[in-house]
Image (tube, rainbow, N blue to C red):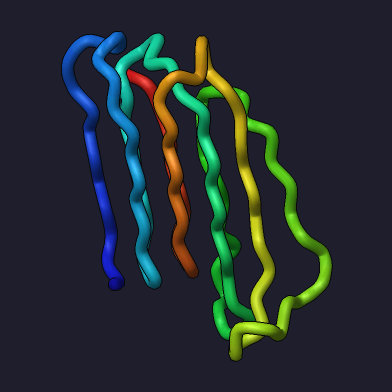
Length: 108
C-alpha cells in the first residue's frame, strides 16, 4: 500500500519481463540494464496537502506532462505528472504509479 520501493532489474536486457510498481505514499526507484527495451508509463499524483515538489527523474528522455488544475474526483485534490516513452523495441511494459513520492527511473 505505502512505502518506498527500490528495484534493480538484473540479467540480460533481452530477457522478456513486464514490470509494475505501485505505492500510495512513497518514492519509487527502478534501475534497469542499459539497452533494456521497454515501453514506460509513469503516473505520479500529488495532493494539495503536501509541501514538497515531487518529480519524475529519468535519464531516458521520457516525455513528461504536468496537469494544471486540481483534480477533485478522488477525495483530496491532486495534480498529476505523466511520463512515458519507448526505449528500443519497447518489448517490455513498465508501469509505475505513486502518490506523494518521487519516481526515479535510470539505467546501469
